[in-house]
Amino acid sequence: MAQSSVNNGVNVQALLDAREALRNAPAAAEFTWRASCKWKNGTHAQSTVRGFHGLGEEQSHKSEFSFETDHPEVFASEDHGATPVELVLVGLASCLTAGVAAVAQNRGIQLRSVEAKLEGKMNLYGILGIDSDVRNGYDNIKVTFHIDADASKQDIEALVAQSQKRSAVYDIVTNPTNVTVEVVKRDSRG
Amino acid sequence: MLTEHAIDHVVLERGDVANSWRHERWDSLRLLTPNWQSRLPGYAYNGADPDGFMTMPEVVAHIAGFAAASSAPVRTHTTVISVRQIDGGYCVATDSGEIRCRSVVLASGAANIPRVPQVRQAVPQHIECFTAFDYRNAERLPPGGVLVVGASATGVQLADEIQRSGRPVTLSVGEHVRLPRNYRGRDVLWWMETSGVWSQRYDEIDDLERARRLPSPQLVGTPEHATLDLNVLRAAGVEIVGRLGAVRDGRALFSGGLANQFALADLKMSRLLDTFDAWGCNNAPHAEVGPAERFEPTHAPASPRLTLDLRSGEIRSIVWATGFRPDYRWLELPVLDRTGELRHDGGLVAGAPGVYAMGLPVLRRRKSTFILGAEDDARDVVGHLVRHLAQTTV
Image 1: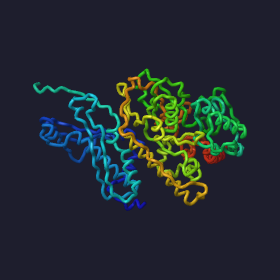
Image 2: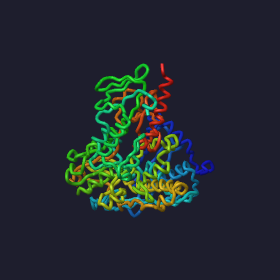
Image 3: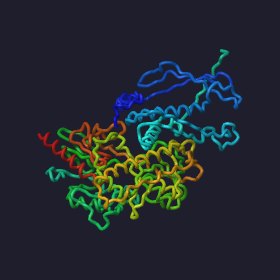
Image 4: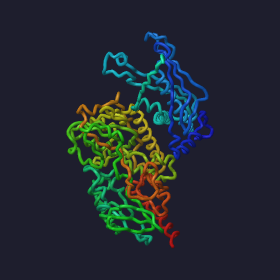
């Protein structure tokens, strides 16, 4: 494979170097990701991300990123943004897609196009409380990748399989995660 | 080999020769390697069934036969209490006295203690738990459903045996290695050896750490030479679920990523068979092997179960087939990494000159943990040991 001529825009060397460096610095590998969310009105909320912690110190994105979430009009909402469950699909899709690019670069495979289509099936009996046997979240998420690359079908399948194996969001979605929610009462009259 | 080099040595064994084969294996276990592969230096299988698979009593007899034939100076019933560094070498304390030596070979293996994941702590009390060390046969399990966790050789063999006993088995499957028993009319391990895959050296492997962590392949040694993969187990009625992620409020939660575990294992198996085919084109006479074959993909259940209520009575026992770890509690040398594994370069233990390891996964070659793998590794390690002794002679 002509690895040197392949360019998917991923700096694999930097990633491999980081892997080596972090192997001997376990504390630096401990990251904390953060998001903040502010209720606007109805089901409309605005979330932002900027700072995170990693490599032993506070880090920051180059700028703050903001996400509007709401529900569509069929839910009697004003539709100011994507639904949170759609954002979960966005997270999964973008994580797997980035993984495909990184793995392809590492394996010397030139990508020409990568498109993912996602479908999450959900029965509203769950969130509406109609049937307690129906879960709130997705019963099933289907991801379909369309990939044009200089590689055999088998190698492309292996790319996508490896991307899933190393994907944080795929892991978060497919495996249980402990979630703790704390509440602090604010007193605006004080 | 040490005798050939006229190096004074002693072999310490905590029990009888082949102790772990005698006491730490389940009743029905047979070797995964065919008899003709159970070669040790100057000692080959010469029985009537070269293609068969040894039972544990046969393995014990084979290894005891080698110990006798090679006149190895084995001190049985001698338990090592500690190994520590002293001037000019090492002091090995045993329950029958101390031995001072200039070199130590650690051959206690990688499978001394069952590795059971943390989630074990959250399993409800009434469920009986077993590991591959204390499981003997299905009849010793309580009647009723059994959750087998892990799908290496151990996991698939125990799932199969327990399901046959009439206890419905749920098998939790994470990363695994799929192999057919036979390929193109030959045992798959014939291919591993003859094509040279098993001889691949540790310093030629891209991701050595991964190769060393790989679960054992889904193989079983039976008189029928049967393949035992997840399709076979499903057809036998075993319910396949994803990797066990947590037990929460008495409910086992399994990963929804099962389909990708299947895809990865199928892809890796196909890649290995491609390697065999490429080698076979140039090296295997057509009379010796059959035509190339490909196997059915692993069929994913339509919607594998994600939760299992361990309080409902459906599951009465859990068998943890989640691997093993070495026990180095007696090794008083600064040679372990933060996960408790030995730091070594092809068996040369880092930071302890004159200390060597044998029989660890991919120690020097892919075959290092198989009986037939001992010879080449031993030759390399002994070669180094001899030079070490020559250089440090006072």
